[in-house]
Image (cartoon, rainbow, N blue to C red; front, top):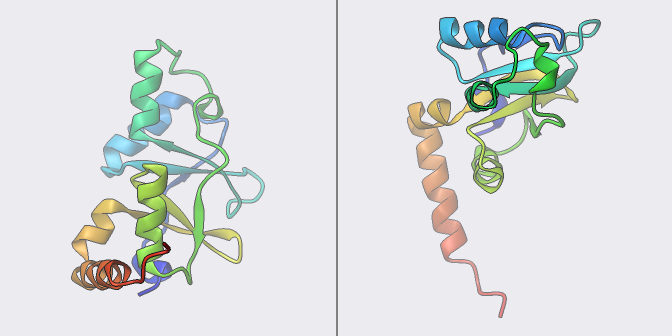
Amino acid sequence: MKAGIIARKPPVTATPDMRIKDVAKILAEKRIGLVVIVDKAQPDVVVGVVSERDIVRAVANNIDLNQPVKEIMTSPVITVEGEEPIWNVAKIMREHNIRHVVVTNKGRLYGVISIRDMVAEESVLKSLVEYGTQEEHRPSAD
C-alpha cells in the first residue's frame, strides 16, 4: 500500500503570517493534530508544520499567541512522496518521533498521514505486520 492512498483527505493548511492562537483554534475545531503551513502565494508549497505539541510548547514558554505561527512552526518538514510504501512511512515516523507526515506529489502538497490514519486502516496494519515479518527474517549483517 502506498502513502498517497492513506492521505486521501485534503490537508488543513494555514499561512506563516496567521496568529498562533488562530492555528490553535483550527486544530481544536477540526479535531486534528497538525496544520500544514504553506506559502501564501503558492498554497501547494509546504514551508512548515504546526502540531499540538508546538502549541503546547508555545503556551508553556509563555510565547505571545498573537505572534505569527512562523515563530513556532517546525521547518524543514519531513515529507514523503505519495508512491512511498506505507511501511516506510511508519519507519520514518518512528525514526523521527513524529505522529504526522506530510505527503507530497512531485514535491507539491498532497495530504497528511497521522498515526490515527494508519491504525484505522486494517490493510495498513496488515502491511506493517508483513513488513515486520520480512525484516525479522533477513540475514544478519555480521
